[in-house]
Amino acid sequence: MVREVRPLLLAADIERPVRTSFGTMARRYALLVEVLTDAGLRGLGEIWCNFPPWAPVDRIALLQAMGPTLVGADPTRPAAVWERLLRGNEVLGLQWGAPGPVRHVLSGIDTALWDIAAQAAGLPLHRLLGGGGAARWAQGAARGAGAAGATDAAGAPRGAGAGARARARPAAGMTDAAGAPREAEAGAEAGAEAGPRARAGAWPGVGPGAGAGATVPVYASGLDPEGAEAMAARQLALGVTAFKLKVGFGAEADQRAARALREVVGGAARIMVDANQAWTPRQAVAAIAGLAGAGLHWVEEPVRCDDLRGLAEVRRAAGVPTAAGENLYGLAAAQAAVALDAVDVLQPDVSKTGGITESLAVARLADAHGRRCALHFLGGAVGLMASAHVAAAAAGGPLWLELDANPNPLREGLLLDPPAVRDGALLLPAGPGLGIALDPAALRRYGVDLP
Image (cartoon, rainbow, N blue to C red; front, side, top):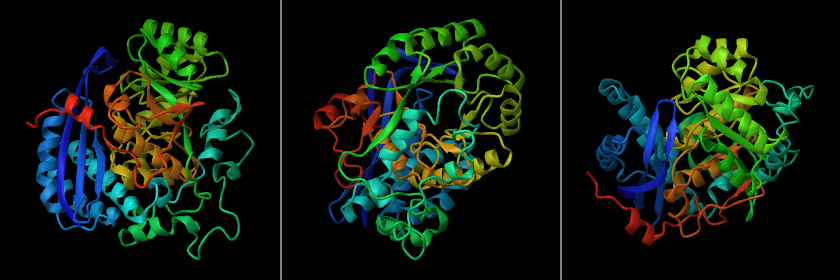
């Protein structure tokens, strides 16, 4: 049972600020959740707190308020705990005017509980969740789902039809009586009482379990228009073949950066852009037209995240696949985006939109409706590795997992075994749970006294 819940706040100075269309991150933060059990297990999760600079303060206060309500809970039933916490705090978020921070804190708690559940089962988290087709997905991402112009709006090869979208169903004999892959049984049992979300990792489409050496393909994100070429060159050396450029800094600057990035990465690489909600629908259509020469694979959050009709309008008018999800809080919001035909690529964030439980549910939604899932993440090492485990368990397989190309000591220097990218893919740890351990020296170096 859960014995204690503790926040850990880390901060690191950086040489180059991270710019977006809505603001600048001059310092990197990581707010971790540490859940301890009476059996001696420790689970870790990460709470989104990138922006604004005071974001950690209210999230810490909320976590400290939620923590005592978790004492005595069964950590091997994370989806059931998630449902209870959501019911108990969702109205608080509405009354407070801060539903986002409530979801952020729930996300970190949920990840820590799944970490414990997988440790208790003696399995890497992606195996508990029912995953294991990472090699297959790496091949799909290397193809980019086909050459430029050879994919449909959802990212499946043109002409492949529904079979491509529902790819890699388990062969006969590979599923149990309920249709769940045999290796997913432990994950299904871990939260069966919590309904569809609890079984989000146990749906058809999950292949045989991967062991040591499992990988998830990544794309390089956070490319600043003023330094995109150098950032991309470093990622090319790691075998990365897809790149996401920050835009929304004015037509001239955006177009110049996109042209320069294309020149560096070559014609075969994928280029996406992220406007961070910078434009109105009309502005977005004009801006995307101006970027057409770069050959965009998708445009992310071209308009406000709460303007799904505007996003659908942009998708229809611009003729470029749209991506969104980091600011669509919960499965219902993602369902609304799909119902309006507003999005081609769904991007749940394990630290932001509802943790592992909700991210898997959104991935399932994407697979069921012919969309693609590309997990969003721009934070520290704990959230990155949790995202990688979810990506390795997603039924349809991700296009790619997002990997921030900006230097971040809380990603690169926080773990005893830092995240490693080879041949364009992130290596998954083989140990139980998340399979990670915090470096005590890093905690001393970057630890911040709680407010």
